[in-house]
Amino acid sequence: MAKKPTIAEIREYLEEFNPLGLKGASIDLISVHNHLHYRLGKAGKIYCLRMVNPESHRAGEWLTIPEEYVVLHHLKFIGLGPIPYFVDPERFRLPLFIQEFVSGVICFNDLKPLNKEHLKATAEAIALLNSRNIDPIRFPFRKGFTRYSYLTSLKTWEERLKTIKEIISWNKESDVLEWVSKLEEIVNRAKPILEGFEPLLRETGSLFNFDGAHCGNTYWREKSGRVVFLDWQKVSYGDPSFTLARFLTSAGKDGEIPTGAKELMVESYIQTPHFRQIADDHCRKLKGHFRKLVDQRLFERQIADLIWVVWHYVEKGGSEAVEGATSVSVRYARVLKLLEQY
Picture 1 (spheres, helix red, strand yellow):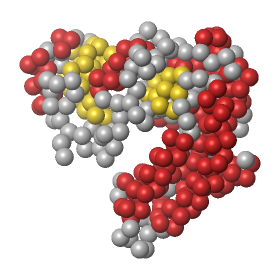
Picture 2 (spheres, helix red, strand yellow):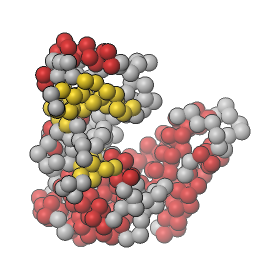
Picture 3 (cartoon, one colour):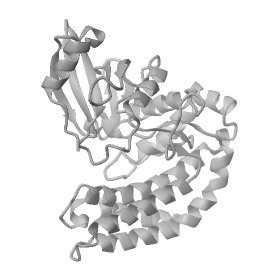
Picture 4 (tube, one colour):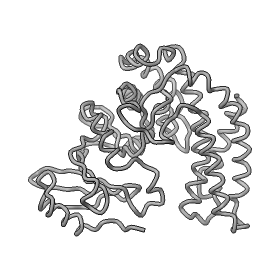
């Protein structure tokens, strides 16, 4: 497995190729997650150098660095993401790009409980995002990065449950296999419900979505009172309600949607001029059905997140009982109630 680049390697690269005149810049590693972020400073200016973390167990899941650069280039005039300045896919041992260092912001996870201003501004930002004319003609969305059907999620869930069983099969004392059985039952019960959702999804068209629009990637610009999204590692094309639903499932604790948040965000979304543009230009049936689409996608996302919690825990090598180490119990109880409603 490749190792994270050292500061010395980054410095050597800057010295040799001098991107943006950054030869001699100060360099600090400031974030190590699925991606690596280095702060570059020179002559009073600060930039962010970003690349995929080669040591992440999820390193192959994301957009490539050049793809992410292209996405941000499409969005650079509307303020929803950092401004991209430079991309280099081959001269360093890992592809990298340099973007705006976003400062003066607060992560939404640190603002909870979110107030009406935060929720309204986020709904408006998502409507603006969805209205961007980024489609498969302008951007080559890869397989698995489209959301034309809920059945795509079913396949992902089945694959993840299979992976969990393969990883944990040797550990007879683990409670994970017991949970896998419960989750398989959830999937079986959800399948006919999702199939019933399909006609409306097909009729309402497709839009550009930011799959990472959860509170951990959503930031509040203190001076302007506007929203900016960071970590554009996964975008998709399909369900017009996906980005809004994705945000809502992160707005509370352990997937709980705060009281009134869905209603406020949906109403704020459909009142924007961006929604009217979307409905007129792309998806006329959205005007009467957006609320229902959101409910359908929230049902799907709650199950997806429930399965993800167990899959992610096992993938990371968790050794404690999954019930005590994760939020699986509370999420499971919520999904059971949703199944009863449908």
